[in-house]
Image 1 (cartoon, rainbow, N blue to C red):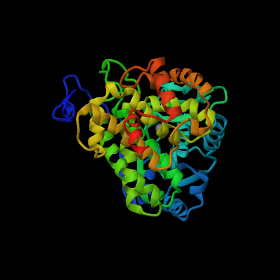
Image 2 (spheres, rainbow, N blue to C red):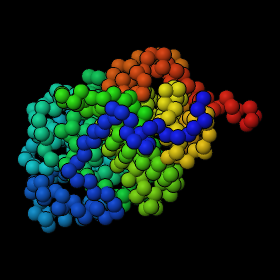
Image 3 (cartoon, rainbow, N blue to C red):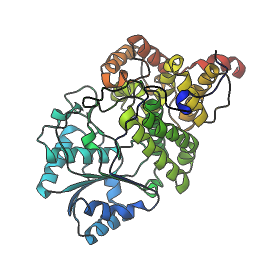
Image 4 (cartoon, rainbow, N blue to C red):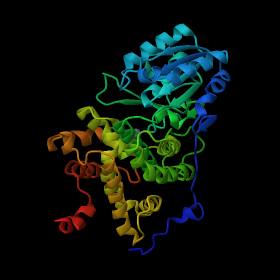
Length: 426
Ligand SMILES: [Zn+2]
């Protein structure tokens, strides 16, 4: 056992063979008041905009002001608030049809993750023929889409900088993704003022999902790409995604509880907007893995929010991967201010600290609490294994046994540190 809590070699210098890959919007604007940049950002891309906005967003005074500012800048805007939760594929094609009638040059998404994903898919369907199912999976978008301007109003999905949009298709048992660098928005405008006042559960589930994005991209597989060919959308852990991912862990770990408890305060929203943005940049190339793979069947069966599921599952995923990720967990421990100690013991404490964060913001502790029965677990494992791009992106390839271990622990709600602390508590 190592006594050192020192991070791996790349903390001082990149390890031999280490590589980096980031894909980003042309510009990313972050900070209170950046919404005022919207007219300039849009008018640089076109004078005819199709705006997709959450219905709630469209009732706010700031949205009306933003539309007026667009008009004053010479931009004609057609607005759709037809953002159906979970983005059923027929609703996407309906909005795209409306958009076609307006012949826009640029698509603007304003709202939560679904609104931004819908903007991406509308931009896709205006440039390439349907049906949308042609583009499911990775790298299936054949060329440029309409330019997209993304304005998130929650801190969570990171969709403003990512190459993915997730949809529901009744033909498929699980949700399905359209993943392509073509979908990365051209401009991201991240104004934390827009999230002030969001209810605690929205803040909690979106915020913890951003944390999961950061942690999973940091504990993803390491495999140097074949640079002579088109890269996969998600290439695993790399120097650049790790840099922003670890900073996201630090910022979200220090501020998420505060954002949930004090919904009206700007400062924790500023921190969460920053952390969520960085987490989105990290997983946009690093990718996510097992919490996301297992959330697909859990979310489908329990009808629970995405972030509730990924947040609930993360401690158990880290527990299952712990033997293979002691150095990474120690670096996460540094970011979360977990006290120093022998590396392997500290890795156990880091998993416990992650679980504490998840619990403190109101995420249920176990799948049993969601009403899942033990008999459902084998089917969940089977369906998770089918999400190959995610299960193959973990630090070690996920075997059926590993997924069984994750699901069993998540169902009962126990991690290793419980064995040490339970007798003391009792
Ligand atoms: Zn997620």
